[in-house]
Length: 267
Ligand SMILES: NC(=O)c1ccc[n+]([C@@H]2O[C@H](COP(=O)([O-])OP(=O)(O)OC[C@H]3O[C@@H](n4cnc5c(N)ncnc54)[C@H](O)[C@@H]3O)[C@@H](O)[C@H]2O)c1
Image 1: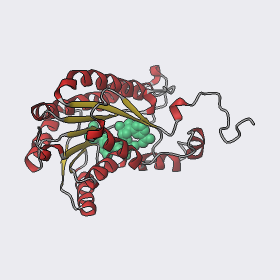
Image 2: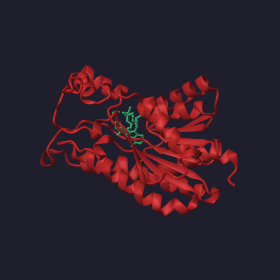
Image 3: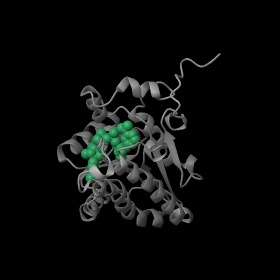
Image 4: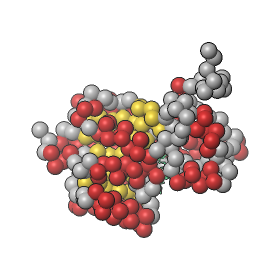
């Protein structure tokens, strides 16, 4: 049996803000020691400190660009030295940039950047945590995909392609690790009201009301609703769940595109 100590370290990438911050906070509230990885020293440190003060549990923070395998490996060493090797990895780092353009009009490098952050970042960090998870016979990898991996949207081909690729990574890695006590799953959030999207709504780039109306439950999701789904996937209760994508989208992806008003169902 793996030691209970091993099971209680969760590492979250992109943890300084938004969904990643909520993930780190929820894991910490559930008595995990939590490692936060992000790009900015100030933001990552203050997020880790704020969470530790709120929950009273151990946190550590590291600066690393998930695209960079060497920087990520150094960050992983720091986490192992300060806490222990993580038993839970949440690959959350990403950019929700709204690059609305046809493929032929996209800036050079945009597709590479999308793939590097979302896909290479997920692969880099999964490679780093797997040896200790295999040695312990227990591990949980949770990859943050998107509702756009279920239902594509036009003119965001880089984001859609990268998020769909995360489902492929999730399934292939789940098969590679299934006999090792490790599960690999993805979460596909719908519209989640994080600061980055709030600011976009305030700037008139996103129509906050229209998105709420279009979502069958009639509202945006909250970061902690994504985090709660991750807690389930990380738990022992989810031991027979692997290779799946858990959709947390208020019903958005199952809604057809007929545009009916859900509040005025025919009688
Ligand atoms: N907000 C939504 O509605 C929504 C919906 C579906 C999926 N997602 C996904 O959820 C994740 C988090 O989104 P969010 O809304 O919280 O955005 P956010 O911008 O608030 O958080 C993303 C975090 O990732 C970090 N990051 C970005 N690139 C990085 C890199 N190369 N290395 C390390 N850290 C990096 C950022 O600094 C930031 O702190 C993303 O993967 C996003 O695609 C978000």
